[in-house]
Length: 255
Image (cartoon, rainbow, N blue to C red; front, side):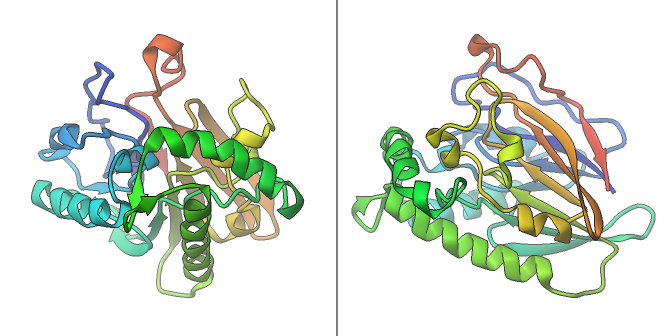
C-alpha cells in the first residue's frame, strides 16, 4: 500500500495548500492539522480515502472529551475517517490486507525512565499551559495527560500484539514512539519527554510507524528480531521558524 503522510500543518496560522501525491492509495493526517478545525474541509474531496489521528493542538482551549466527540462528528461529515484507539483493515490495489492501528498516544513522561518522570512532567507543564485544555471542568494538565497516555499505551500494546488476517501493520500516533525521533535542535532534554515516548519495545509489531508532533522530518529503520520497522515523520511545522524546509508535501511511503 502506498501512503501519503502529512502532519503539523498548523493551518490555523500557516499559509499552505496541501496537494495530493501521485500514486497514493491513502492519505494519513497525523495530527495538528488545524487547531480551529476549519481547514479539515480541504480534505473533504481528496482523491483517495483520508485517515486522521488528532494531535494535541486539535484540543486547544477545549474539553478533551467533548472535543473528541465533536471532532469525530465533524470528520464524519467531511468523509474523513478519524481513528482513536481503533483498528482499520484496508485492502490495497494488490489485494494485500493492511492493518492500521491508531491513537494520539499522549506523552506519559517516562521517556527517560521513572526516576526522571517528575522533572519531565514539570517541563511538560509549560506545554500543557499553552494548550489551555480541560477535562470535566479541571485543567488537562501533565498528570491528566499521563493518565490518558497510559490508557493509549495499554490499548496500543494489546492491539499491536494481536494476531489476525493481515499482511502488514501500520501504526499511526501523533506523539513519537522513540527518542530516536527527538528534534535535533533540542536533543535529549526533559522537555523532549513531552514529544516522544519510549515505545521502542512495540516497534517490532509494526512494519511501518507514522507520527507527527516533532517539527522536523525523520525516516529511519529500527532493526529487531522480527526484521525492521520503518519510522517516518513528515511534519511541516512553522515556516517562519524554518521548520518547513525538510517537509516533503507529496511524500509517498510504501508498506
